[in-house]
Image (cartoon, rainbow, N blue to C red; front, top):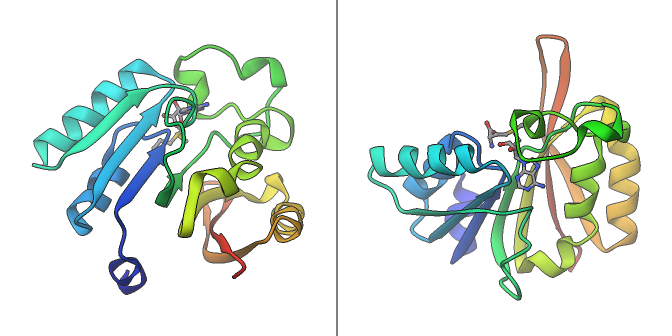
Length: 173
Ligand SMILES: C[S@@+](CC[C@H](N)C(=O)[O-])C[C@H]1O[C@@H](n2cnc3c(N)ncnc32)[C@H](O)[C@@H]1O
């Protein structure tokens, strides 16, 4: 974590904050403005409560991805997306299904964020994303490279039949 401490983070955001544990932990660690979004209103409430219970300030907004944050560039973007391969028609509504249903290749939501990362991150900004082996990491890395982002796998874990990665995306400067 020294990397993040030294990055000079002013604005951090977690997309899909769920319980709020991750963004609250980040808010405990970094002195910066912390935001969260979730498509599920109950998740937003949980995030707000988790932050308050831990004495942290996190502004959580019920929205699709970062749609309402126009022109705000983030120094840190966290996303543990719904990555499970499902029928695309399961990626609907704002209920609990949105926590896992990832549609085709489990990438329906992930790809929307990665293809607009350039417009979401500040010059020094970094994005940490959880991905599943079935999401085809190599293809994602190729696409990001073509779009001037390097991607480093910083963690790899096999958990209860899932082969997971945490990938860090940052601009090729
Ligand atoms: C895998 S869960 C991760 C929850 C939490 N961040 C964690 O790591 O434990 C995915 C979260 O993303 C939210 N989500 C899914 N699609 C979203 C979208 N388009 N915009 C915002 N949030 C979304 C879900 O409601 C869910 O809370």
